Image 1 (cartoon, rainbow, N blue to C red):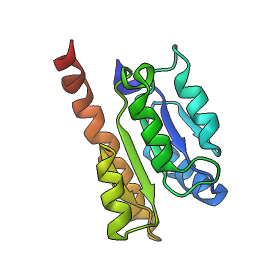
Image 2: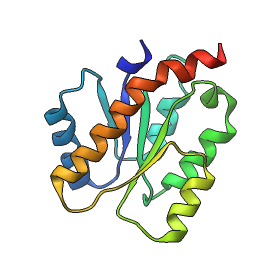
Image 3: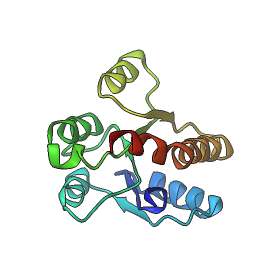
Image 4: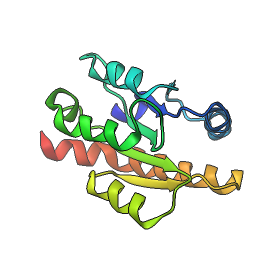
Length: 143
């Protein structure tokens, strides 16, 4: 089932990755969580034909290739688009420009990291649970 596939997390900040590792450990999902500190490595991974993740969670502000640029590439490459992967941004940015830019990229969610661990965990849980509940109905419409 698609909902049990890997969750990809693209986050360059080590402290933020550690927080997300703790959140996913606390939430106890059976999915394998694959972390990337470099978005170019994540892109190379996603391009592999055998890789079909459940969801991508990506920071916005990263060196080399930012989250907006990564999403843009994914939207333009048919081999990746055909994998039908929900794309979620996580960011400390809450400015109107960042949110508008993210929405222009046909994302499926935008989470503000914030400083409250429990609120952040609840946001991640709500998002993952939503997609676990709905991913199969969205995918089956295309078949």
